[in-house]
Length: 233
Length: 233
DNA sequence: GTCCCTAAGTTAGTGACGATAGGCTATCGC
DNA sequence: GCGATAGCCTATCGTCACTAACTTAGGGAC
Image (tube, rainbow over all chains, first blue to last red; front, side, top):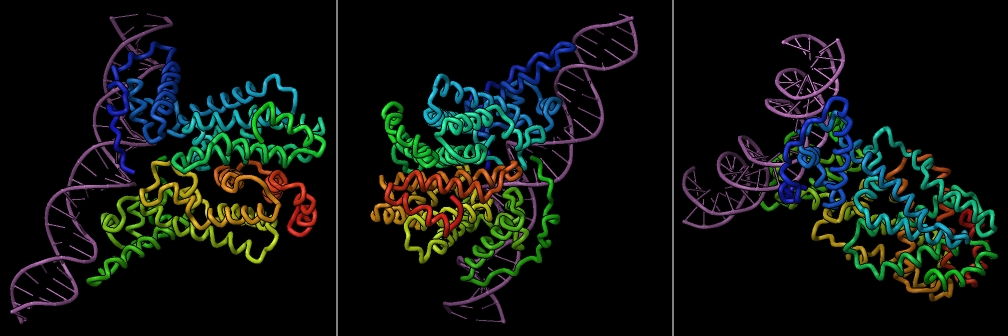
């Protein structure tokens, strides 16, 4: 629990005392703080290394200056992770781009989601595993529902339903898919030292189970072909 | 981030200075600390309210006395949550007790798991959503695999496979089921203010999707009957 | 009864943390 | 050249987990 990594030990240079911004350029500091925070968060891979003091030192300013641009530490962290949230949408869309088959699309989306989470554990943890009290007011939970990422998932499900491949309420189906991929992602993040069997095998089995469980009989007949193209069932 | 609830505000009486234990009864304090910590954790429902100072005050001792029995705060917290881990196994076994049908058993187990997690959010968070670095040495990740709870799940899956209802590797199937129920549980815990559709409906759809995705064609024919008895698909 | 050992705690303090109150200073319009 | 103010800083608070060193009370030996 005690902090055991001092600032110098985590590789941040001891702050060459940043030059003061010119008049009218006060907002420049805001983006410098954001950049430094993101760097600290991703490089150390440890939220605890991202203290207000550490960020201030990385930027080359005094700790209180951060509060000129962010109400508190949570707002700063969520401002950083909001970019990751947008990036999550992008990598998913990219993974599913050009895929006509609705079932294939959902499979590839799931793989991309899990991959992104595992590769960005600390942002993922803040976005989806933090305490409700830690979410600032400008990032209320309903923003997830209204987000591009969630909307794109629902749209993909709607297309699958329209094609006769899936049945049910699009929102509830989407939440189920989200829960499944979030479940394995968060377990991988929280228990990296768990004696996992082959992780790709675990992921594939989970995704195929979801898809097979959701698919209509008509779509189910198509699954072996998709499996042959896109990975094991 | 700043502490905003003082000790007096969370209902702990201001410590009547506990009587010193007699010789040879030093271990009594250990269980008193455990009990007080659990009470604080469950009553406040907030890990941040459980500080070493708060626990010490609740017991009626000075903070350093806790370190006579626990190496650090994490060890204390995990010692408390280990009981919850055992309790999780019990409620699941109780939920599935007397259920002969392997598929029905898995369904009821899933419901019990989710229910337990949602009803004990802070212990669940510590056990399954905390940082890897926060797990003390006497609770390594492989203990989950060796635990009664996980073993009982695998056994239930093995029985289902033996009955011809499921197919595949028992461990991987079990992990998939775990991931699914953990996913929705942890989302409910992290995002209580998310505009969820009816939560029971979400749970049922997720569980039925898993079961339908895992079931063999033979077992699949039995599902409508189970659905009629045990809740919607 | 008294001595002394040791179990069972305490007091005092360290350095980090998030956050706040209030002060200083360089720049820009005039 | 000068005042206003944007853009920061110094000093400090209260809390945190944790440690070092001290004290006190109980019980056996004599």
